[in-house]
Image 1 (cartoon, helix red, strand yellow):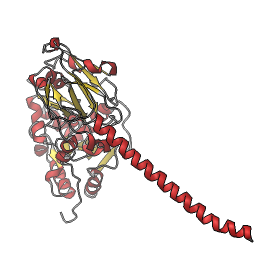
Image 2 (cartoon, rainbow, N blue to C red; image 1 turned 180 degrees about the vertical axis):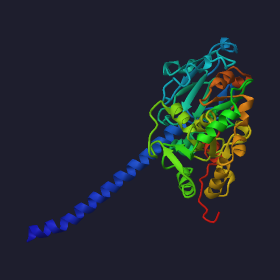
Image 3 (cartoon, rainbow, N blue to C red; image 1 turned 120 degrees about the horizontal axis):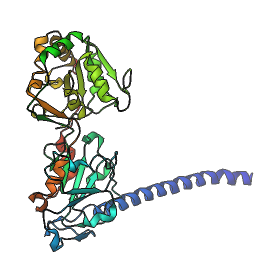
Image 4 (cartoon, rainbow, N blue to C red; image 1 turned 90 degrees about the vertical axis):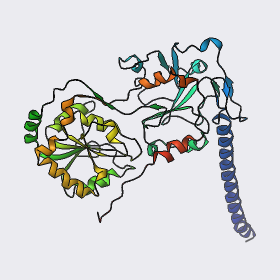
Length: 395
């Protein structure tokens, strides 16, 4: 009985001790993690604001700063851009861009060789792949550190943002207030057009289906999927891609769109996020085909598009009202053709980003001016004014 009593009384004590030690270890780990991250990020990421040999507001963090050599002031020399954090497609997106005939400045080289850090004129950080534990410990006072993202804030936000104070000198995004504006596409006025309204009429007579949508992201921040569900109560929407009934084969997007243009009146260019200026390639790509793009996003479409080239879902009080209008347009060729008359004037559509401005900026006077973003999180997240579509049954 004594042994039984001792065993009985010791077990709770042992269990409580185990719980206590576990809690102590958990608290210790969390405290250590917070302390290490705080010290590391504050000491490495909050970099001294030194540009062009002049000194910005001081802080005492141990980052080595290197200035200009006297022979590096010439503006006509080749500029070196270091891609510090990788792109999903490697360097293919950028490496041959500066040799394009449309670029007014071609004297730029891009590399991912980190050994060339200190000779680089610009260091580019891709937001989707940057790590707060992988930031350079040294920088040149003549360098521009560039914040780069083509994704909207809801899909490019991470916990290290709050510590990236005074780190970036320039921004390169789709937003129109970026230092280097890099939209997903653009429309260029041309002198000639082969478009004919009589050909459009023949095509219009062949069309039998209302709208199509190609999508692989099924649950989005914009809530576009719920908008489409409401539309489907009033009109047919054929969905292709990972979220639909069929998938367009890899590298066959252009072929699929061309086939769609023979059957559908409208193409739904709905964005996965409703943020200022966020307009992706799906809109520019749709402009190339004989379907009217129906847009759903936060872009200033009137500033980036030919006149009367699209229908904006945001201008309608509800998916029902939009659907009613789309039927009206589809049934009347005169009204339908109004959305294609811009093609008579001649336009070229580019549905890929054009990084020419990056090289031009590095060779401009801006390169020698001091600039810094004190709070990149505020600029990128708060000032993008992202929002979500909400269903209003009474509309």
